[in-house]
Image (cartoon, rainbow, N blue to C red; front, side):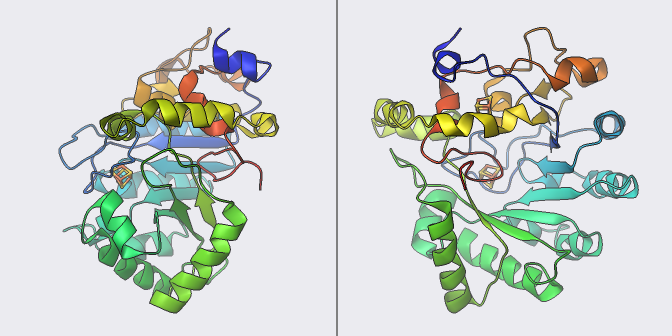
Length: 315
Ligand code: SF4
Ligand code: SF4
């Protein structure tokens, strides 16, 4: 048993599949410092239509409460609209993780209307309500582009109508930092986004940076990697273990590989311990109660209030 499994009283075991998370490709118009998948405009990995068809068959077996589509920027996958429409026709709740600015790229500017017409929930990166901080993490112009898209989404009813949910995601700046209280920060965000930019949204999700990919490179470059890992292990909170997202989801990579989460995907660690690691070999019985593949990076999910793609684990 590894250090993380010992700490959790493990091994960590899955307990059902509520969420089917699908990564449709690694291309992104941004190259954020905290990106665990090291996405950028030069990444060409993208999910094919054939693999998407397999995902739809898989969804039919799993019957998830939510299909969570992520990337990269999902909008860059040329099959995204078709994929979403097929999932929608089958009756699934769907959410897309967007960096917002992708929807200002040529050929992608009608995505806000497409998402609104199909009542797709949106989860949007917005690491701070101050332009200076966002520019440091995500590059210049990202902030103004994101604000412009958020205003348009509000005009379409996002964050206003019950059927059009708009959640924002906060990541701490690079360094040995855990997110602050999600509830307290959400109040600040709601006030500041409204008064500064006239923007409304539903929930703020705080996500702890996982020390892998480009984020780890940045920590190393600053000589902060050991300090950050110590912070994560010292902040272990046993109350977060039941809510670990890997216990309640399956993640599918752009090429059809099955993972316990997007972080394991970034590390190239498919599901294991006897469960098949490819979409064509999927076995529901084996997957539902599989043993999760863990490692030291998992301490990012159990530090402080805990962290998942749905925000803090302890609300
Ligand atoms: S964090 Fe998101 S927006 Fe930034 S490079 Fe990665 S996928 Fe793109
Ligand atoms: S990194 Fe992935 S496998 Fe590890 S605890 Fe977090 S969700 Fe689970």
